[in-house]
Each structure stands twice: as structure tokens, then as C-alpha cells.
Image: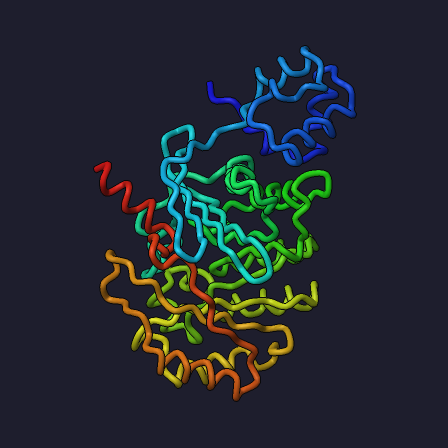
Length: 353
């Protein structure tokens, strides 16, 4: 029987489990130090923990449940990992070097049911949710990769924008956030973590009520229902009339800036008309709205979509700016190593079949 990942427990959950199994409370802090500060890869390396406790941990938990199959490194320092889970499924994790630090993009599901028509992640339907330990371990694999280089670098930021819809795996997502944010563990600040959703309105309300101080990004990609439904099936369930009130609630509840992701697709959603519609849509919340314009990474399975021209991107950007909307054209990473989310996984599964 497959054992549970030790990374899936918060320190409170581990403390409770150890107490229930006759161990001292302080053992939980010791185990966490070994896992997250010394970053061991086996229980036997935990030298200050007694044999009975180590045996107990080994009987019930695994430290390593991800097996790295492929590691791609880009000229710009981006690293993409393709990992195999214990059930044979494949997931992707990406390390990006930013001006502000080292950011890791994690996957939350095997496949995706949202079905955005331009996205490589949704080519393969969702097989299952990742448990929180599998999401945490993605960060650990990247940190271990950095440790091996011996430069003293550490993961400083997390974006939950990999394969899958995070809010469709809500409980495991929240557990993951609590684990990586804990000061006794990886101690990654909540404001250095961003969760992206395609717009599951009920979960936006729930996320706001948690008051986690974690950043929120909305994959918008279109400023009207007709166009958004055309490229994002999720808009049928949660059209803008449902999505925008949820966003208003989040802004009122948290008073935190929200990022709107907008992939620019040539001659689809990149006209000046759409830029003006987007500016109008965000007008009443522009003091806390930030638009991230994303040049499209072409995917072979979606040949109907092409990257917007530089002229179109500049016009779109200028139109938003002139209408008082804060925006930026996102810096690209890893364009020489299957850059699009889900692209490497999709390629490997094709080879296997």
C-alpha cells in the first residue's frame, strides 16, 4: 500500500499524529527542521530522533514520492522538471529566475477539466487531484536542485499556476499554502505566493474569507462573455456577471491587489476594441487591479491560435495605460524548453503512446 507523503502534514497535524502514537510533542519540530531546513531525503538521516519514532515514521510515511524523469534547463536559467508520481502519472514544475528572486510554478492536478481552448494543460482531461504532500514536494525537489549547485540559493516565491485548476483542489491547496508559509518550515511569505484561478466564483468567496494574505490572480483572457465563453468553457458556469461580484467581494474583504492574466491571441482577443472593453470592465476597481499581458506560447495541438504581433501587444498595452489601468507585458521564461504549461508532459505522453 502506498504510504502518505510526510510533506502533506502541517506542523499541527504532525504534532497531533505523533502525540496519538505515543511520541513527545517536540518531535514534530525536530522532524520539520530535518525536512525543511536540513532537507534530508530519508528518515535515517534524522540523527537526533530516537529509533522508535523513526521506525514509526518509516512505517507510515514516505519522504520521496516524486521521481524526476526529465530536467530541462533554459539559457535564461529557467528549469523545468517532469516528475513521475507513485501511480505513474506525470506532472510539471518550473523554476524561474526573476529580478526579485527565485520563483517556482507548481502543478495542482494531473490534467485539467477547465478546457481552455488555447492551453496545453487541458489537452489531457483531469485524472486526479494532487494531495498537498505532492504539491509541497515539488518545491522541495526544486530546492534540492538549488542545494546541489552549492550557491546558497533558495526558493523565495511560489506561483500556483501549473497544470490544473487550484480552486478545483481547494482543500489540498490550502493545506499546501499553510505548510510552505510556516516560519518553522520553508518560511515563504504569504505575499510571495500567488494562486491563479480560471474563475471558480464560489471558491473566490471562500478564499477571501480565509484571510491568508496570499495573492490572487484571475485568468480572464477576454473582456466580454461571448469571447470568453469561446476560449474558456468555465465562463458558461461562471460568466462575468457571477465572476466580477466575487472579485469585488475579494477586494472589499482583503483590500489586496488582484492580478488579471490576459493571454494575447493574434486576431482573437488582442484588438483595441477588446482593450477598451477590458479597461471599462476594470474601471471601478483599477486602484487594486493589475493586468498581466501574456504573449502566447504556441502549442502544436492548438494551431488555430498564434502569437499576437508586437504592434498589437503595444497597442493593447498603450490603450490600457491611457485608460488608467496598471498593466505590464510579462517577461518570458524558458522559450527554448517547451515553455507552455503542460507542453513537456503532453510531449512525453505522446511518445509513450
